[in-house]
Image (cartoon, rainbow, N blue to C red; front, side):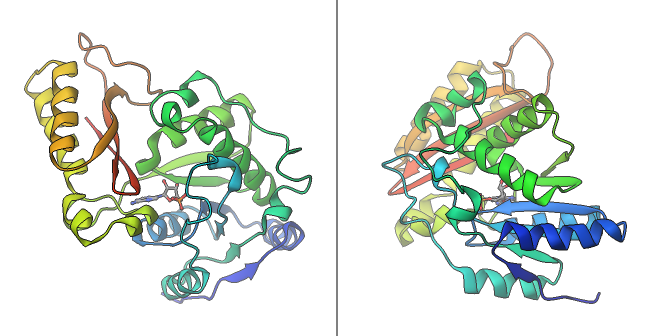
Length: 286
Ligand code: AMP
């Protein structure tokens, strides 16, 4: 397969110019937004995008509006040179958009127009990260207006984000098709994440316990165990492994509403837990 170096642009007008040329040629466009510090999970979004459309756009933008005041916006790993090397080695990204905050928020952060999501945005991770998902929706809305892709790829690892973006797209009648990319994992089960960098060597060894705890819940559900019992057991298991769990919950797939134990419906088990200074999240479809 012929590879290509991605064209790197920093401005909205440069993105728009390129998109206009592609549209004039009849090309379809797939888009994978990221915050950089790219790993194989991100690159899987690029290859799924390349299979879904003629042209692939990736963005790298550490979005200030989705971080709380005490969160890791300043510390978040910014590794643009390594990211570009990975993208060019993969050879399947046409355009890499790397804007400065002023390009995405031309009126400043205080005076930015914001997207306000419905109640689900304040549950699960949203209960522990107030305003986080509104910030995500605010930036995804802007990026979609800039890139105007046919297809948007988001990862299953951030399932609540995916469901909320899906809702935004439907409710705001945004003309884009959302597709989910499966979670890529390390060999020991740990979901790949930029925040895994925060783990020291001892924590990294214990980190797969989050995935293992969710696997156990999935097994127990298959065996008919009570939902609350199995999630309480998972939280206890995480605490024994040195985590500080935020939550382990069983919800309905698709809309993340509470799962009804009496009904046979597709479910998802989701967990979030702190290990040292890393807040790890993961989920499994059940
Ligand atoms: P981030 O840079 O963390 O904002 O992630 C950018 C996109 O990559 C999001 O749609 C994530 O869900 C997705 N992503 C992150 N980690 C993984 C992974 N391990 N496997 C697949 N997709 C992922």
